[in-house]
Image (tube, rainbow, N blue to C red; front, side, top):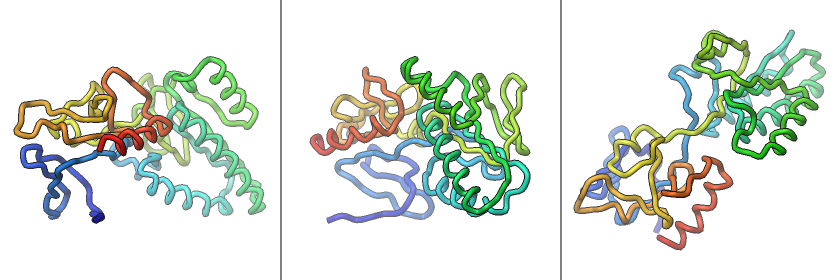
Length: 252
């Protein structure tokens, strides 16, 4: 039997084997637990008011993107869009946004101008080979996507990205696609984490408790972005996250 509970987890009661939920929802007991909650980009408080949209949760990003497309026929002058994050996700997003917006403008007969820029702190595709980076930079140039390297963004305010060295970049819309972070309650849940706050698991994706308990955490598993396999560091990317499915299937 499967029961769907639509609520946000906010912590664990390891001693009594319960998942704590937000609001007035009662805790849910478990015998075996698998934590597969992904990660989310680090983004400032008040990001929506600043015109900044994180790519996760995808439902929020999708709604913002649909709203942006609906407004294309009404654009006047020049529209400037920025994507923050020079990893594979940011690169793909900047390229696809540019292609779709160009198509939508042509379809609506609007002669407004627009630009898409990719903003990165430490270079494009830093975890890829030099050859892959060169090809990606060439693709950006050919499509007319601006590349801003060396911009260590600290916050966004009043249509400006502010960098730690004082540089600024103007925008009308900004998409945040930086390195993912764990949910805040993970560090406080009593399970071991890595230096970045993600759950530390063994090769069977099994968690372990920080302190000796009647329940030692061996019945708790984690996979995907929220987990880091001890001794085998991997980027927080979907191509690695999906591989946890088979391991969890076999182990659990």
